[in-house]
Image (cartoon, rainbow, N blue to C red; front, side, top):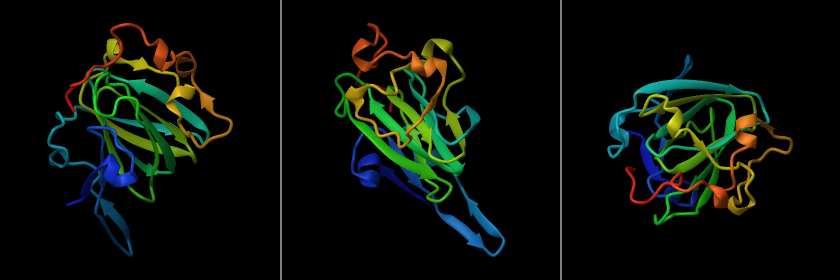
Length: 188
């Protein structure tokens, strides 16, 4: 059984509902075997319905994205990604908290991100990320906040970020449209 930790236990900064999975690694002279996700590890989560893969070159920044209804589970088998999370859930115990930490093919951490938590990553190296989601693509639930909003205090770990047009045009947290900010309590 892996260790399933709160974010505070894993990195010292908390965002309510975020979980970090430190899986057991089984290896021998042939290589290694790792279970990267099991439903039972995060019992409060809904069933994951879809698996996705993202390949990004070093220096790419993705995010910050958030959903009102969808949770994500991220795992990086190849490379190193700097994860940036920011709690947007108004009235929640960690509203306004930002956390930055690395997941990689070296530490094998998985991270569960509940709805309402803005999430993004920077590719510190070339990266392959797999992620599970508990809802099918819904354009009405694809929201964003500016990745470089100074109010978030995020350390992306890259000097010349490669950012998509979509992510360059996301609003600052203070400018999120009425009704597009998540409220606490939410399903975590």
